[in-house]
Amino acid sequence: MHILFSLLYAPFVFVSLKYFDLKMVSGIIFTISIIWLLIVFKKGLKESIFPFFYIVVSLCAFLLDNFILLKSLPLLISILVSIYFFYSYFTKNSFILLILEKFKKTVDEKEKLYIQNSTLFWAIASLVNISFHLYVLYNDNINYWIIYTSIGWYFVFLGAFIIQMTHRKFYFKGVKNG
Image (cartoon, rainbow, N blue to C red; front, side, top):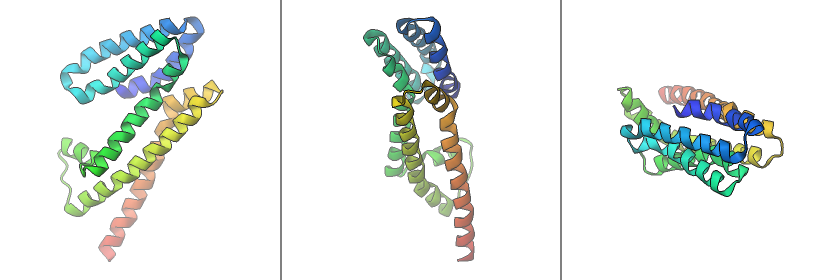
């Protein structure tokens, strides 16, 4: 559900602000986020983090009547994801391995070590994403913000995925030959 919200968030905010004031738009986001939270709350804390962020930011934007708060939400979520990546790396509990475990994939020890070490790569890729978010947040061109925060960041991670898979292919080819 978070992916749907991230795709629609920036275009929704932009279009809504053409017809409604900031308080109304913040109130709508707040209401939708409360409903979202109620739907996912029973799934656990991890599922509730994103709607909680939307609730807090929309409430602050409403109370402070400040557009930059609504505009900063994708950046704040990216920072949260980056913290998780770094946490995952330093605790040696790779998020990729957790995903593989969910899908009941078995991974040999060499692959586990490679995945754990590649978590740092993903943490760095997330910092690149934050850099782009900062750029579009403070750029005067609202179109940059809309495009990057709705779909642009997917290309950063798609590019990182392609680099990761290419590196993995050559790494394991070298391990087998060496």
